[in-house]
Length: 233
Ligand code: 6PG
Image (tube, rainbow, N blue to C red; front, side):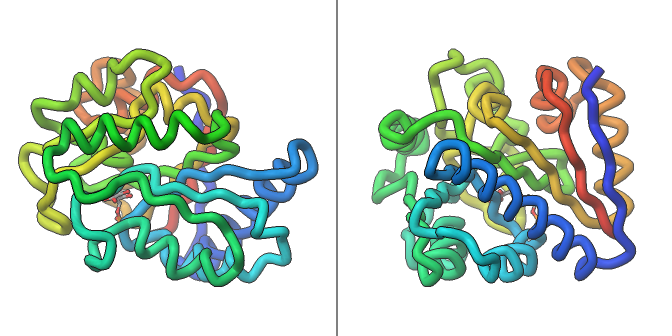
């Protein structure tokens, strides 16, 4: 059974301060221990206000490398691009924000290329931060024909390409995503979600474990480290 601790907040603002504080601490500890830090961060709407607080932390950002934990296959100047959102916030502070995709349209090839890029980075990441969609996806591990690739890729594989089915309405495009093994290899894992519906869904997914029908349940079922889940209504 996965060891998950829920941290509840009354408001998004309160949650943003707490999570920014925790992530700042994770970065600082990595810098102290190894002289650099590597984070895989999510897209979506929830993290924006938290990133804005985090980037104000007095840290040696030049030693911090940030990758998107998943990316939508759109040009980098498209507003759906996750690395674009990360670069906007963290590049001005001096962090190294690394794109994982280029112009490749085919999602399988894009997945191979993203994996090759990540093989050049120091591994494991100090943090993989996950969100969750209303359909129970996490990172870009979605229901669909490529779900087994993302869940059961060999341990050394870091990213794969996926075509969600059905396509999510908020960004109906193919993706690349960290694999389950890559997510679970992180030194620290945290989840940040908003809303009662997601809370209920996630609690159920954790309870169902391996038999969960939701991608996030299947990912967490193999997690053997404690995980903090931050939540606000
Ligand atoms: C993405 C994500 C995705 C996201 C969830 C939650 O790029 O689509 O990384 O996994 O975290 O869909 O998104 P919200 O924060 O908008 O609810």
